[in-house]
Amino acid sequence: MAEVETGEVNADLPSGGCLIKMLCDNALFIAGFVVVVAIVAKFKLKDWRQRWFAAFCDSMSKHVDAKREIMKNDLFASMQTHQSHDPELRKINAIKVLEIGVGTGMNFAHYPEGTRLTVIDPNPHFKQYYNENRKKFPNIHSEDIIQTTGEDMDMIPDNSIDVVVVTLVFCSVQDTIKILKNILRILAPGGKFYFYEHIKEFNPKKHPIRSLLQTILTKTCIWPFMLDECCLDRDMLHALENAGFSKVEAERFYVEIDHFVFQIIEPSLKGVAVK
Ligand SMILES: C[S@@+](CC[C@H](N)C(=O)[O-])C[C@H]1O[C@@H](n2cnc3c(N)ncnc32)[C@H](O)[C@@H]1O
Image (tube, rainbow, N blue to C red; front, side, top):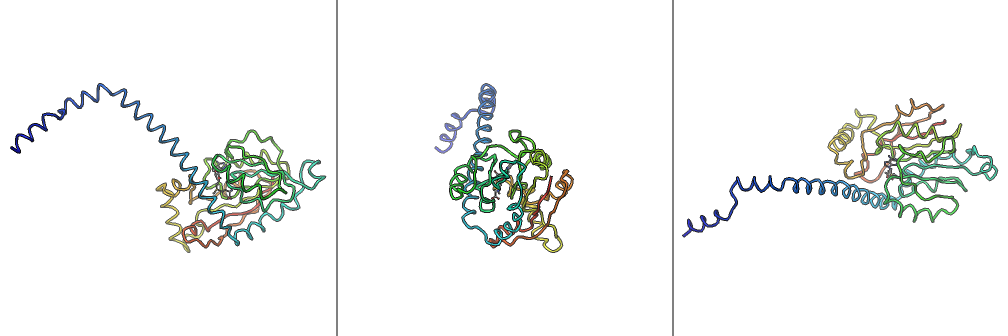
């Protein structure tokens, strides 16, 4: 009895030859299907990752780290007395600032009263959080986010900006040198570039585990995949020193972070470069 049943089932299955013939007959259709699925996955996945990252940054921004704010107060202090290149703005003691990679708008509290703020960011999902945040700072004349990257900001005219601010962005960019060139192009003579970035461990002998983890998590793409291309193994100081600024004041330091997981981004670089 069992042998008869087995024989009947086998008779219904296509033979290996039939299966290959069926695949060959439909090869064009199958190839088209695979291409469509791959394209949808690529763009949708990017969209989902960007959406998740914006929501993640927003939730992190709710726990403003007091020590990091003190560090930023110190870093941005000289912005308060910076004079605009524009005579009209100088009359009212205001400056024109461009923030690259504004995200949710974590630096609003550090801008001088009356700042004219232009902002760019490639991730469209930050708009809702940024717009919500900017309402809390009516003293800053902030514009809508221009959706673009620091590599591609031709819409910002040459010599038009008094101060450029970039915080925690260079870890994710495609082309650091291109962005630095753009910053030099758009800054007015004497204009300042303020930066604060997490960087690769600069004392690996003292912190070998952190250094190793930064390498593994970045090279395996685990960290970049989770956090919108963020890399843990970068340090832009050399590129900055060779970019053509008239003066660069930079300091590598450790910012204190309470959250255990994020202690991996304690090694940092901050400073001011002058055009
Ligand atoms: C970790 S968030 C930092 C946001 C904000 N600057 C802050 O300090 O909270 C990184 C930001 O850089 C943006 N970004 C990534 N690549 C960029 C690029 N090539 N040019 C400009 N911004 C970029 C991301 O969309 C995101 O808003």
